[in-house]
Length: 314
Image 1 (spheres, rainbow, N blue to C red):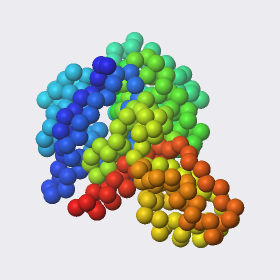
Image 2 (image 1 turned 30 degrees about the vertical axis):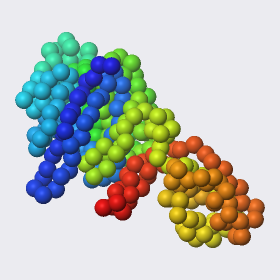
Image 3 (image 1 turned 180 degrees about the vertical axis):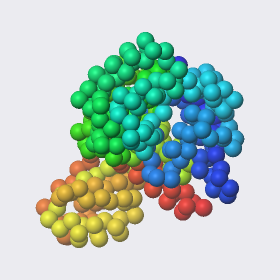
């Protein structure tokens, strides 16, 4: 496996606060690698260190074979960076924004014209070419930002929560554009807090308090979860929750419509029988079955439950 990004012991402190705490990272080339985590988990800080905008407090980083931050200027010419907030110019038109970015990237007139035409076509911006960016919808601004970030055909694309302000259909279309870029050899690192987006990544790291709590492909993470997942259907879910809260092996519960989604200790013996005994007096017709883990289950087990276990051990 060839890697686009390799980091070892990557750490960033802001005074007494450690935002990123000694992470090791390998991002394969020509794949989408995801950072999944809540606000404050270190996603944005890590991305800013990888592209040379922040100097690490300690640790080493290689991006596309170059040392960062020492060779950050060389790396910047080979990567595209799209932030959560729209960072182009509201008072310029779509065409003017793209033209300006082409000039920043140092593209000559012939290449500039060809790239702008390609991006306007590929990202469905033709009907908005003469429209000021400030009047575009959220999805249109997102497509414009992606078009601008890829004008110089970067080898690596860093996306920091790029879909936080758009609707589900626009998010889906955006991801189709990302897979088209990967098919052409681009490596993409994307941070997100959407579970459905994380499912689309080839690999992902779950970040929690500046550390990598779990890493791997989505299916692998679901298979290796440190929990047994049980679903319960019964008439009185409120009473069932109270009863299950007293079961020592139960680690987490969440209601999904008319079901309870329960995470139990992985070494629980006959978990279905144990939960059935707890709720039988309340719900004689309860249906209890073991189910596969979702990525949300993986996230909860790797962050909240892992953190609680560490705190108890301390």
